[in-house]
Amino acid sequence: MGAFRGSTRVLEPGCEQPSTAEAPVRTPQPHPTAAEPGAARPTSRDVARAAGVSQATVSLVLGDKWRGRVSARTAELVRGAAQELGYRPNLAARSLRLGSTRTALLVVPALTNEFFARVYTGAATVAAEHGFGVVLYPSPDGVGPARDPFASARAALDGVIASSMAAEALTAIRGSDLPLVMLDSDPADGAAAARVNLDIADGMRQVTDHLLALGHRDFLHLASAVPSWTFDVRAEALARALRGANLRTERSPLHVHDALEHTVRALAAPGPAPTAIVCDDDILAAGACKAARRLGLRVPEDVSVTGFDDLALATAVEPELTTLRLPAERVGERGMTALLAVLAGERPEDGDLPVELVVRGSTGPARPRPAP
Image (spheres, rainbow, N blue to C red):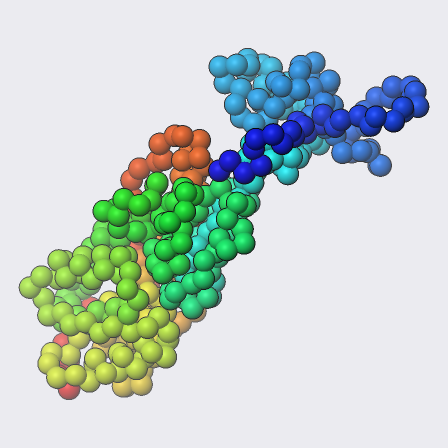
């Protein structure tokens, strides 16, 4: 980003400039290892001395830029010396030298959703392996408008990873010069430097194949009321898969109580009674199960219910939910890996992440019911 560049001179970690005051002459002492009590923090100079190489070589190896410049044997010597000494790079000094803070921003709609907590875990794990940190920016109103996250820290970021569900929070990001990696977003949107998508359409196909094989022909789609590409894909894939079957749609906010109320309304509506409820989220599915019980219906004997995400909630309800397992941590890992690739001028990995249907007790054979 160019921050701190120009005339500012930053020393390589371990190259501290000596004081102009005359220092007393000391007898050289062997450098203590990190295991010794009272040991001073080792520097790159100590690593270079232990490995018998220059500090420049240490920087190349520990910065993972040694290939083609340093032999594999020398790189191994440097890594071994660094490990034995317990050396850790001074990331603050390195940030000044590179004009980089090695920090990524992760924008999610809310931290109350377990899925995004797991996305953060995956991103933070990969980031830590590369000396990066991840700052979370949850949209204050869930999926609504958010304040500009760059108001006071624009120069403290190297890139952004963002969920498409936090759409309103992305306005400021799209107007910045920071590389942007989008999660679960429309491939036709060319604003992102890279994107990480789940194979949502195939997941919905797995759900419908399962329910059709059980004999279901009358469906209720309990859809999320959140305007987002990922939910649009679910609706489109469901409609394609159930072409010829009876399908009605009810939209609900992502809350159990709202899902309960909307399901009760849909099940009481005129027309063929649904024998299967396909939900856009496990939270909606939990509300649907409560609605069925309120109406005196049994799950799955009278109505089958499926979820989406495979959150902890899926096994907390009774019967446990048949749901689509989304690899949330893998989404975070792939997102951070893609950002690192973009920052390095490399091509990020392509291809949607696969999803998996987990069949549990909330689905069973269809038993036609009379219309209300």
